[in-house]
Image (cartoon, rainbow, N blue to C red; front, top):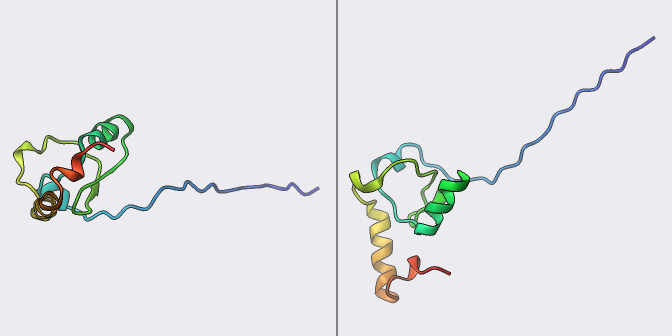
Length: 88
């Protein structure tokens, strides 16, 4: 008698995110406050204005602001006051 064994594999799909190792450790980045809150609850990563993707786990007050985020925010504010941080 032959015994049939079946084995299978499952695929866990997750959205691809662009991560730059180490960069998020050097700077505090600009992200909507509601997205930070949502990330705290769900554990999902956030995307900063500069494109950095990470799960916020630390207090950003002890770090310098990301120069790219600061520049992007400055340009956006010159077109429309506080635009990227207005709630949808």
